[in-house]
Image 1 (cartoon, rainbow, N blue to C red):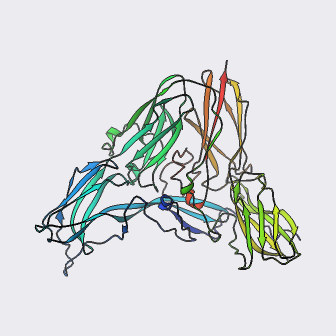
Image 2: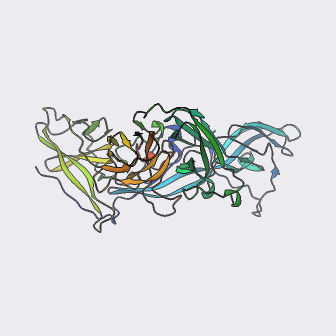
Image 3: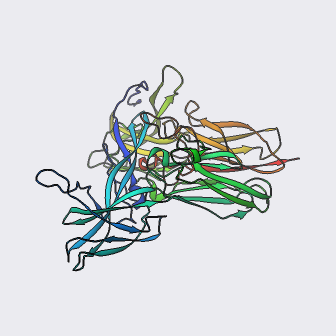
Amino acid sequence: MGPIRHYRRNWRERLGISLVIVGLLGLLGVYAPALQVAAATPPAAASEALPSRAQSTTPADEPPVLKLLKTKPEIGIVGDPFTITATDLPPNQEIEFVWVTVDGFYVTQVMPENVEFHEKTFVETRMSLGHTITDAQGRTTLRATVPEDYGEIHDIFAVIDEQDVAKGGFRILRNITIDPESGPVGTPITIKATGLGWRTYESTLAVRYNNQYTGIMTAVTTRGTAVAQIRATGPVGKHVIDVNHGAKSVPYLNNQQSGTAHIPDFRFWFNVTEDAGPPPVVFDWPDESRIASLTDIVTRTTSSGILAAPDISATVKPASGPILSTPIVQVSGLIPNSEVELFWVTARGNRVGPRGWHLEESLLLAAMTDNDGSLSESIEIPDDLGGWHTMKLAQNNEIVAEIPYFVEHSLVAVTPPRVRAGEIFTVQIKGVGWTELDNGVAVTYDNDFIGFACGFNSNGDVTMNLVATGSPGTHLIDLYPMIYQGHGKPPWGYQVPVLTFKEDFPGLALGYNLPAIRLAIEVVE
């Protein structure tokens, strides 16, 4: 039996397009992916979300006059206590205080040949801060805590019987910390920001280490909280870390003269205590609770959407891994004592040439089913592109099931690991993908962004020949996830390190498990 089919599609074609809005679902660790729209779910820390309500109107469609809510204090950071006081309301009435906010999403288009990145978007919503009852004079006070939410001004409403009766507000200030503040070369430094805004010029941070640009921090789907890790590098002594505005993905250096001057920049000092030699290689994976667990019906790259018959079960375990892995394919419900074939579907081509790229199939396994129509065979994952692939199971020249498999990044080598300044060393990794979300990696050298590398045309292989620089001692190389390109409204520049990849990255809700790969070399005399 030969290959079922070989199909070529130009990259300009758009087959099986599905709109996927990447939202806040990972905060609960639960996803409900859909072929059209993934619905948003509020964070676990928030109270019950309420639908956005228009203010009550009179029969003449005139808006009612709302009473004034007083908040004390009126500004603060996430976690601060504050009070909301209402007066002149109906006596002895239950009051619900609601907080107006937004839900943040990434918008992508998923199709068999590609995943396109489009934009970030925000939808207004409300959440409850709590309930009280007015006294005989119509007065009540609620003691609340500033929720973990986007920064800047939020409206607060007092609601009686689903009608807004009073209005106030609160401003969440941005706050940034680092931890720890000292340690040897290679120490992970956690940068945590709360209160990032959702508007374009309030929503992105740029990180610099010793005046060298490192990457961006985002909080689109994490309600204004951004967490990143960089590593301590440089000679023994103090090193400066600047975290400031980065709406265009690069540091904005005179924010004090801009329209966002009310939002401060932050500066920290880290003390490198010693250089104990190059730290071991680390694959820094995203938070598992933030990665979507996709069902078989969710559109993935290379998938044709063919569903197995109800009596056929087909799985691969484990369902992800690096190239040359040997997972087990298990199938039941097939025709007994019959030949079956398993085909691997991948992409071939590039974004540079006029022919674009196409999907291609190759034979992965040919075997016979058992007397009961089952199959259990070990397979070897090809040395191929990373990301989502489909394995097509065929019997009697018909596709009877599709099995998804995710190819992860892996390291081949850093050679040589000890070099003189000015000499070449090579970093080689495998399993780099081809979509706009996993087409390459953004690279830093001693926390200095030096460029990006792609693995599409080389079928997942990225080989970088870099020059060792700096004084004798340990020097760090970090490979970060990035967005290769986008469509529509770009939220920032592309092809730069996304330092908050663990919790806020558009690929997470599509099941893309993309790590930072943390490497090191030693420069010798």
